[in-house]
Image (cartoon, rainbow, N blue to C red; front, side, top):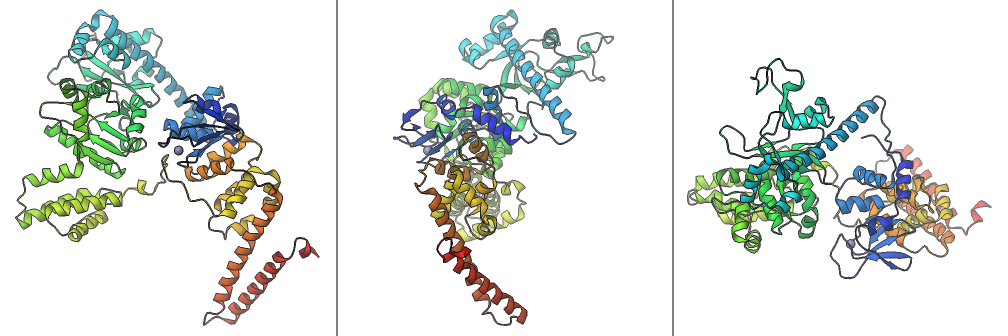
Length: 619
Ligand SMILES: [Zn+2]
């Protein structure tokens, strides 16, 4: 993505009234000059979530969440800044023109257009498959099959299930008839080119280019895969009749729309439930997920494929802190659970395991036992490490020292992958107790393992964290100066004329004030405040949104001078004390001593000037 110019951000902020935007998600009540509601970001009984129409910002005095209209959409919808910006731009009918480096323009534009065409194709394809299933003769067998699995017409509608007929060019010829070009059909992955070496499926070899292509999905129940805003971006097709040598499930290949490892099936529907319950039930298949969801267990997701990828775990962590893996009890299911573990632990997710009875999967189980029994299984799901320890110790004679040490090493390897130190500590004490190994011995094994592992660079990447703690506010005088520099034109001008860069360089929590002063925000202009906040970290944005809701002191002009003076004096005094200590050090050269003496005199003089009543220093 290119960079989006500040003016565009301001324009979009100006065109989207924050009261209207937030009010479209949940009702707001007027309270004086502001609006209030129960905070959507934490549990509360009396509203402390405040929206300011004049500042065009929001802030919660309970949990500290707050910021611009963009921040609200990002946090509430769990999306990133570019998506929030596009959403608000689209709402206001503004075209986002990104600035690209030379040469980048053509490609970006072409890719964007291709993605648009592919989205359209997927939407229409999903509809065509769906009508095959629900309205056409050709879907009879598939309808029967789904009925036998408890999928009613209503459910099939809600999930837009479909059917790809048993034809080589059924979808392809329909899509070409709709005006789609073969090029785009191939790019979508829905149509494949026939490998020249392969024997012709059912057509003559003298065919044209069109006939050398064929449908990827044939005689399959079609599950559309959505991105998290609900657009169809790929399909998963389940074989209608089990056939030897044919894969039971076939997924779309990687395309410009679909990156397999970074999509979770069902997330577009389960988002809100995930946030509410703060726990995700993970099942393997699409049908499992649909069954659970339709029975009222809605905090469910399914990875595409069998194991969690790093990027899927990262997405999930945006919604929940805990995961219950609900895999089949068979060997393949256990393997999948174990393979998922790394990615989940690396993202500090608490992992529990709900073993399904042999021969059952979540789909069959919930239909046999019902919702409540299933919920009891989830509630009773064991901590992954308990399950793991038991499994690993089942076949080991703990009385044999050699076997015990080998087992301890294996478990240390797993424990070492837990990134969160507190969680790791718990795991270590659990394992050492279970094995009867001294805690510090096991810890030593784990830390040796951790050193051996090369940790990935993602450990250093900054975390974007919607639920993050409130940053400690700077001390009072800095906070007040920030408030004034954001809100009062005269105070802001006064500060900008001081040597603020030099002074703030010596003030530990003065960075945020520096950022406010160096920006070109306009205190009276809500859109420019929103555009300014976009460039801040989440923590700083929260601080700024709280300052924007505070009262401005009545005598702003006098106060800004007084606080600034206080800060300058404090900085000078600190520098003075450093210099006075340095000059007492032994073994200073004569040059050093002279320099320090000069410095001390200079600092004393500046302090003296500052302590004169206003105006006196000029005489
Ligand atoms: Zn809150």
